[in-house]
Image (cartoon, rainbow, N blue to C red; front, side, top):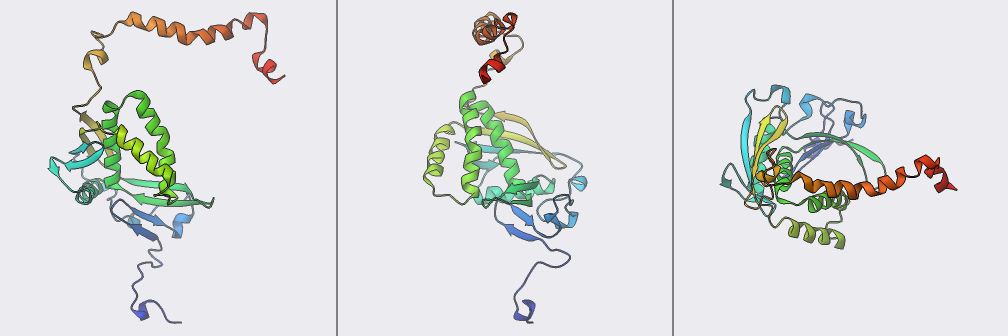
Length: 252
């Protein structure tokens, strides 16, 4: 039998390192080998982009990420192209052990598959973007974006990048994020990326309304909401003295 090495074909998989790996700008995935046992703890030697959080620097590092209309454009005040930006964040996040994910996925064909991912840059971007959205998106828009995120991820995961629904969702997100601009500050420490600050010229956050001093809000305004939200509950409560079993009646 002629081996791949005899043909001059490099094969990175060995008995000591039996993992199937895929790498791009966004992440590095590890699959196969002992990872096929979902109870197996990944070996420290398996990881490539992130250091072990236990031996990451003992001093935290603060970084800033700037966004324009939902698109990351700068790190620590330095404007970068998309490729440069993710490469820089991969390096910074990886140094602090940020971005490891152990996932059991539901494949398109119906089987479950385990993969361990390293996404340091992606983790920093998603964490920062969510923080910025928290002050620039109204409640209903934020909730709807979160609800549709699962469907969007499903379309991308299944390779339906050019599907009409995916294009429609792109248009929805583009419109929704027109004012998702600003700067987010993260603190990185031993595998964690913590949001410690966010600011935007389009922030919907109003300190006078949020303050415990309540200078911009009349607490008596809440009485009407309490009354309206309680109407259906009072209607249900009215049946209790009559000895009626609402659930039993509904089944009949």
